[in-house]
Length: 158
Image (cartoon, rainbow, N blue to C red; front, side, top):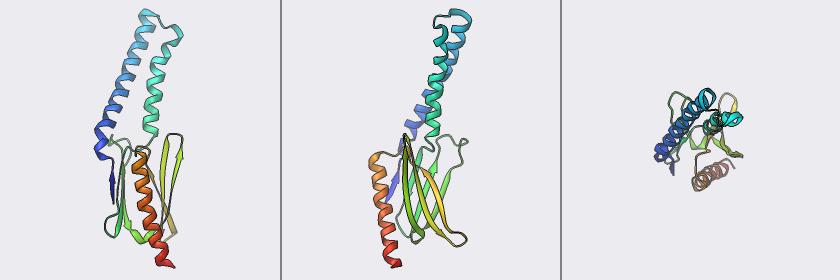
């Protein structure tokens, strides 16, 4: 099964650009209000705070683009940000038989996928991927696919 939200990259770029423009306009409005007009008085700080908080939430949600491929004998996970220099992109590929378990953790607007794979050196390794920008259907499809692999691995072991 292949899963990717790469086609939504222009939408994420649009929101990122919109938030940066809102922040720039807020800073300009704040400076104009403090220097010249003084219409908003103490509320002029909201011109900076609101866009800044929205921008921080957008970045804290993690990497926007998530790709998964379970065709063949290997699992491929890719997780990257729309802004290349912000975070290092993650790209992992390993055989299906190494997958031990997975867990999806959701806290407020954050969603993370923790994949545990077997390793020669330490016994097991946990890989983390940010899946906050996947739709509910995409997240459910991912869980179904990973469940199939985990169940097939359990049957082979027993």
